[in-house]
Image 1 (tube, rainbow, N blue to C red):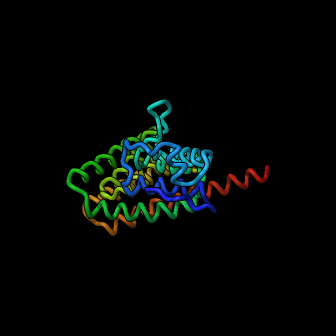
Image 2 (cartoon, one colour; image 1 turned 90 degrees about the horizontal axis):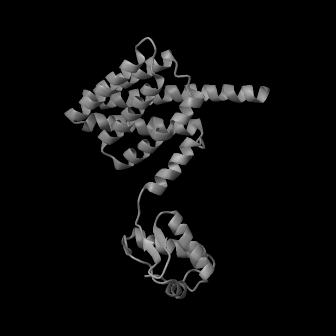
Image 3 (tube, rainbow, N blue to C red; image 1 turned 90 degrees about the vertical axis):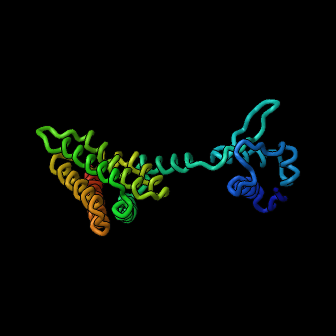
Length: 246
């Protein structure tokens, strides 16, 4: 299964070979890697290098190191937890520039809304329209409930991804919208005017999807994302100017 590691990049080669064996299915969930002494011989490497490579694989969630007489490196398989955690940290800590976030969301969420309009079932349409009405109830009243609206807004965008039936969109947008509130808290006032505008966008998108107007749904979603990202970028620049002037 394994060959002698390339001596000019031993550590990385050991990691890559074991990782590829797991991804390719040569090692299944629950399988135990050969004992350390056998792996050392297979890779022709030192104990220190091997253990460091196994530690990296454990951090990636591909194996679990079990200690004791009956221990060893046990395969966990490939899952999305590590990727989800990494993306969540990037968004939550605002490591992604607003312009880049805007570019990403404008394209992706436009595609998602278009696909949702093409693939929505009657139940999906009903659910979206109900969510849009729920959002309206939090906004168009004497004292808008900002937090409740933002929660519905998040679920609305995530539901569009689910309706698109594309697992990549579902995975990415679920993670993004679970963590993007940090940008909202810092760069959006979300006062009554903005809440009402945002709410009308959700209603328009929901009706476009319900009526299978895919091109309209795409344009509405793109316009919605672009407008609010521009507002956040404007406030970000104002904050920078204020900070520099102080």
